[in-house]
Image 1: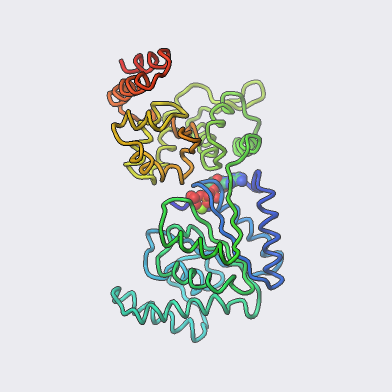
Image 2: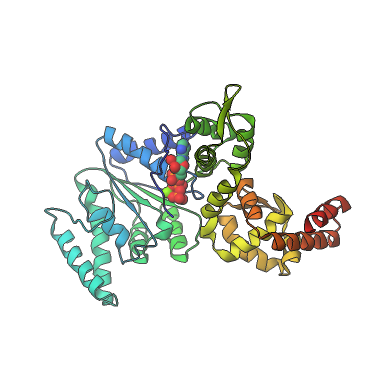
Length: 393
Ligand SMILES: Nc1ncnc2c1ncn2[C@@H]1O[C@H](COP(=O)(O)OP(=O)(O)OP(=O)(O)O)[C@@H](O)[C@H]1O
Ligand SMILES: [Mg+2]
């Protein structure tokens, strides 16, 4: 799922002044002719695309060309990401077969090579090597006449040959006279991406981790989306969004589209609870990319509460602790759960609640019974154990 300019985007960005300043500084450095690479990482929906989109305005002001291409697992063709970035007209916004008009020799040779590779996917190694060499040359030389910005979005989904070219470039240092920004989610983990990140790190790339919004920015964003001050009940739900702008927007939009948002005492607040079920559904869709195995274990964990001891989850699931860690490491990398010693904490209680409410009732009762058993065995207070037993009925 790669939603960039989602509906309801609010300008200016909320709570990202420091990050924007950082990127603007790096853009000025590149505009002065120095190559800079930025690795922009953050959980799904935290605002990576919004931040790089904001860079567009600054690039325009400095009259620096900006090219963007989005990787997508649906476009796995060899060199798809770099073709989108380099073989489209500058006015093109990404994918599509439009090739550069009046292109040079290198582009023409590349276009032919790619056609040949597409016609015969098991094409010769020599063709792949030549295409990789030409893409690397194009990237290196694109800034000969003017500095530029290259934004490669969602590189965690990029085709392997494009990643190889980027790896090759990392060994030579920053791309000359370019600001190169690679955006990525921490999951799914791909060894070739890890190698790329390591190589760029060695080459001196800047690592920018986009953190969730603060509590204050959360309310600010919600109010700008809702169009007025928000009340205590909505603030309560917003506080469970873990500072994730996409989830914050989901909360406000779902309340609004369910017709639940009403003004009382000068603030907007949802009336009734009928909007909470659709909200759970939206939130479950947001984490569906984690896959059934991780979600099943997180569903079990949701029964234990916002934070839980991994040994208790393992006892509940009937699996060794090491297996639970292995399964949950994707959830950890995605920021859905965070590790605190031998405890795990859900990053967004909104997600925990949605997973819990999505459990089939019989299954949920059985899980509460298992939780009571595991917690009693681990010496938890009887009040806690009783709480689970009550919900097991
Ligand atoms: N700082 C912000 N202020 C206001 N809205 C924001 C902010 N950050 C993100 N948003 C909104 O939140 C939603 C998700 O943002 P965005 O698409 O930029 O996230 P992302 O990190 O690129 O997600 P993905 O991993 O899915 O690509 C968008 O609708 C965007 O407009
Ligand atoms: Mg994005």
